[in-house]
Length: 175
Image (cartoon, helix red, strand yellow):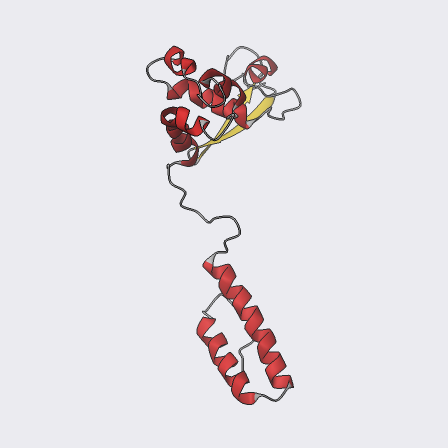
């Protein structure tokens, strides 16, 4: 027996849609008509864009009605909030100020907070930094041993031992 569409319950489901939201995974079986309404094409590939995501969230971001929010516009570039909501793109840096209240709601929903708490561009995690330092120290150690600079090699060896922690390094123990 065919599985009925989870949305309408009438037609047989032909498309499986997996949604991940707020840490939960939800699978739904949809008929072609209901899938098309949700933006899923017949090839089972989601028609997704950030602008559609932002536009959908923007509808929920205006508790006092969309008319009031849609009327707000940026004084610098003239972009109206309704245009931003439709495109998902701001017009200029001043748009952040003009739409700050509603953007704060969107950012909180998308990111979970208003302040960035992760790594910045080009930053390395502490573990990555240690691995890079260990690799550099090992190269220096090999050069020191090759040059028979044993005192320097001993200092490098000691520093490598300080950085190594159990489970982070699979190489052999340093003599």
